[in-house]
Image 1 (cartoon, rainbow, N blue to C red):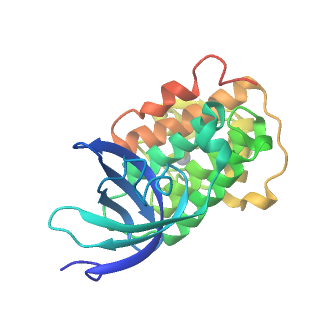
Image 2: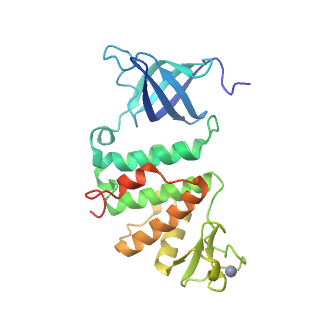
Image 3: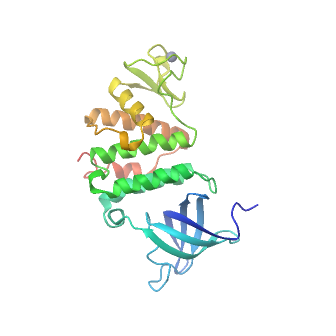
Length: 259
Ligand SMILES: [Zn+2]
């Protein structure tokens, strides 16, 4: 049974698009009410198309779709919010491509996650703002915040308060971490850990997991601590996806990192 009526209207953001045939595009969309969707936008590569310009990646668009046999068909599109830095500037777009890839890889089709959608839009707006571009500390924190809350939303919240091995409350000290076991490990269980977790990294991860973005303080992390936090989160993402993400290579390209 289809999840949606034969003709339906929804807001959505293009996560990914692929050229198809002579002038069509196949779109992977993220919408608040229907989750991830795939649809075809016929003729949308022609400059004369009424759809052209409304289906750019990271544009918040209002769509009218019709159920098709294999793919739904975009019949109308009207851009509501253009995030111009993300569209026009590679440096700003890198973080956006990354969060879009995360959503695309983690979500099944037609599995709605309206709260994650709201977070996704919020993160795109942060990255669009020059002050939070990916290479700044604020932008870096926004990406880690999104990763932790995506994991939370999908039921993969890493344990950061009690030991993932023996469930004793964790203390502010050096602990261990294991993505396979589901989170942080107390010193006694740390022999099962894949990696160590310094007190600094532990505090940052807990803070980001427990705090809504507007209350996250302006932290400045040393590069060693950044690498550690990033490494821990990547180990969790990689464990659940069982694969590497393409954008990881771009995020660490020279000139993108470390500003
Ligand atoms: Zn333990």
